[in-house]
Amino acid sequence: MARGPEQFLDRAASDAVAAFARVGRVASPSPMRIYAIGDVHGCADLLAALLAAIAAAHPADHALRAIFIGDLVDRGPDSAKTVAMVRALQEATSTVVCLRGNHEQMMIDWARKGDGLWLVNGGLETIESFSGIGDESGQAMAEAIEWMERLPTWREDAGRIYVHAGLRPAAPYDRQSDHDRLWIREDFLEVDHDFGKHVIHGHTPRLDGPERRPFRTNIDTGAVYGGALTAAVLDETSPAPLDFLRIPA
Image 1 (cartoon, rainbow, N blue to C red):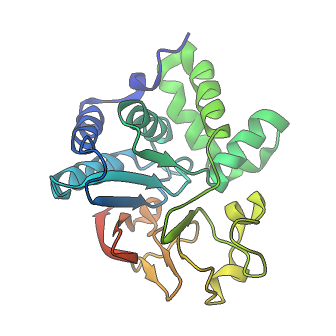
Image 2 (tube, rainbow, N blue to C red):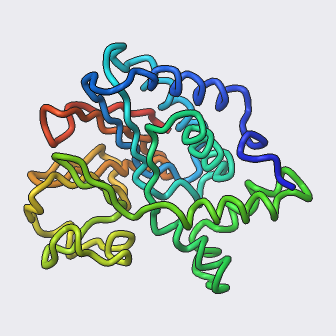
Image 3 (cartoon, rainbow, N blue to C red):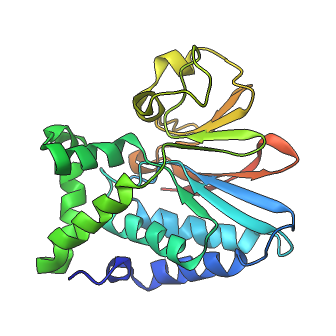
């Protein structure tokens, strides 16, 4: 039986998770600081550095919430460690939400339906990242996939909608298909549509930094392509990001 996500965590990853969990223990109704974290794609060392940066910058008198925007896995070298870090964060604190991205969905479809699309879109690197634990790798992957199947495809708060890819402008934001939430591009990106709340999303990498539009912000800054891993810094005073924390590749 696999021992849980901690088997993939090295000292730096464990320390980053612990530091992040410590700063998240200020309870509401303290002011809330939210960190929306872009597409990690297996860049676990960048994620550890970003978690440490958040822990160092977070105001001591604020409650904390983190929302991962999806695509933890594929293409990068350490998808198993990346998933383990997020699962460990969720075990350590109730303030961490992870959304499902299209790469998690491809991994699920490969496991459940034999769909080979995942293997040619970074899945082979993900399999390799799990293989380092030997005989337990199959069970560890199965447990990770079961966890992914439970991930939501969107969340909202008073001012924002969080989703991996985007939303279809022709439909209300709460009546969208999971397929669009995970995969949409042009129909969402090419129109500045007001959904009534600011949309925080990833999915389409921008190596020149976060893309700020009137009604949406794209925080996929291409970590796996040599860009950066980005967290949008948010609070209750404005629906759009106040700032960004970025860890360059």
